[in-house]
Image 1 (cartoon, one colour):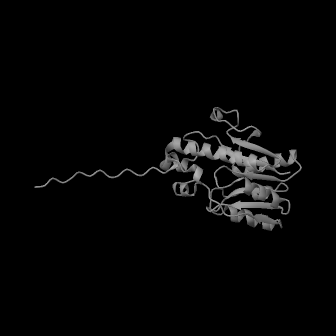
Image 2: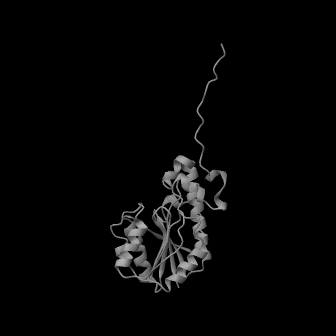
Image 3: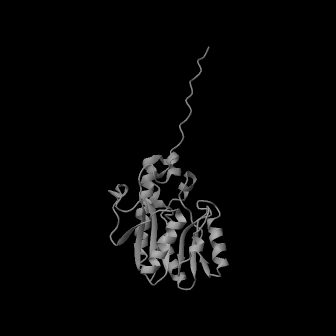
Length: 221
């Protein structure tokens, strides 16, 4: 069966979802990150795959994770050092070395990603060499492989609009059969808050309105 890796940062104010801080404040951005982490892990467990592993940054024993309650049944590992591609490839290779089946890897920035998407990706991975769920900003929220493939993680321009397209180009160059899922939305910037599902629509996750300019009333003569 499929093993599921979840990449996540500790939801620590000022250190996570920094592009949302102007809209939500540091505490609000961290609260949203924590809510998305919780949502992602519960959806991962609900998918009923072989195992769910949280690949944490910083390491799970770091003080940044203190007080963050994680659901039972989630295995904990550290992402370790290196750029995103190095960390993803290392986690994938470790999973393949310990597990005979295919591996899915997801982030926590896309609350629209649910257990149904995960089950479908796992099903498609029994028929394809790789699976990918792209996001509207040009990246991807899920990638799945049936065997290690370091070439798709090395020297990638991460956090750019070309990540998904370049990943697909590299997979095609390797003659791998790829399934793509529907385009979803990451929540990275203030404009993305419009794509939060209904369960995330509370006031603390709404962008703060800019202050209205102060005007003095003109006195009549």
